[in-house]
Length: 79
Image 1 (tube, rainbow, N blue to C red):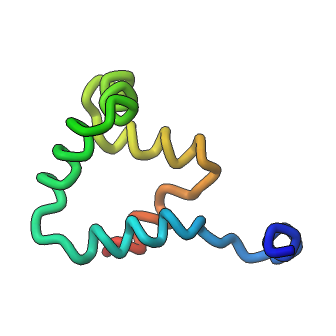
Image 2 (image 1 turned 180 degrees about the vertical axis):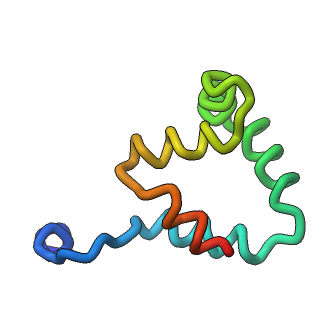
């Protein structure tokens, strides 16, 4: 039922896991260290970053595009 509601709802809502990730980023003191640790622990993240020639922004925007999420919306939420 929730999926049907989201499909009928004209406003775009972020998946819960992305909202949780944003809150986690807001609560940490050193986001760069957290990202580095996540990359080391997750080979998929490393391969995405490698495919973007080490460009974190391009990797982020590519992942957001694959997930049908507006990257600028996420960035604005982090500010």
